[in-house]
Amino acid sequence: MVATSLDAERTYDDAQFTAETIHQSDRQKVVLGYFEPGQFIPVHAPDSDVAITVISGRGRVRDGEEEHTVEPGDVVAVPAGEDRGVQATAEGRLEATLVTAPPPTEAEHDPVRRGLKRGEFDPA
Image 1: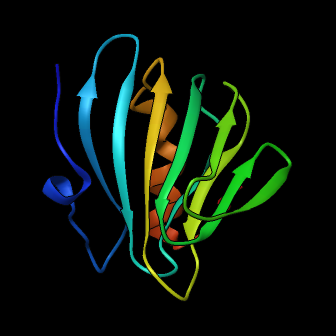
Image 2: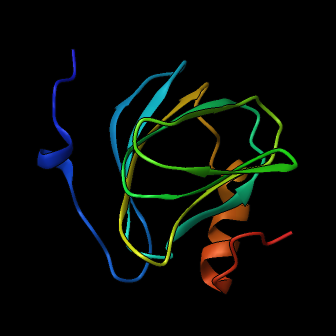
């Protein structure tokens, strides 16, 4: 069993969002995401389901063709193969859990790396 807390794992980086993996198996990956104002996970579409739960702060979540404004307590589930991305508002930090099943591959995260390098939320 993995037991931790948001406080214990909390790490922020001025350059980009921070993802602290607290559990990973062949079937599931659990990440705590910490975003400074305006930071994001670029839009990408891996072959895994994801459930994003906002713990604190506000932002937006891309879910296929839709964008949802999110705040604490909101949950957005995006099916495998659909575009998804997360961005904190410019006004404050965002903290969220991201649970993917199965975990995305390194190749499926190439669009994330490209988007971060270019500073683009939607690198398409």
